[in-house]
Length: 186
Image (cartoon, rainbow, N blue to C red; front, side, top):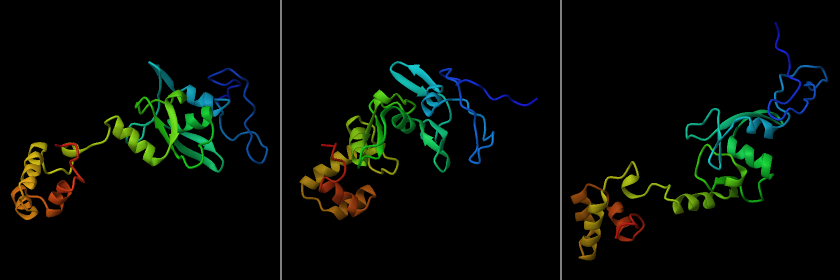
């Protein structure tokens, strides 16, 4: 027995047009939703004010789905699809969709704003979502060691002896000296 094509959108119950292929023949797949908005909303689970995406995720925990776009199917992040469906096109010069709620699964358009790469990085830093100092995986020094190094630098100790003592490069000591790294440590 063959699957029958649904006659109504699974989300809003609006009647669906017959699916036709480019040559005008019937077929072209089963259409379950009347719009991309309904497709997205069918995947929402309300958690507080957030609309959490219920579907596949990428390796970083962001919801993603496959949508028909001009030129074929495309995997798109749920929050970007939400912005395009409910808010509209991205403003000129802003190609990032950022979250105000910091919930990676959320695609509520009220929690999204368009920004630049710098806006996104600044937002993450303000909210404490960036790794600094000892939280970085490649870090060799601990914060108490950096305090001691800064104290030694103020006392006039040169970079070479400090780098040998702590097993790091002279460049690392120099970065600490000129406050390029470990700025958060007094």
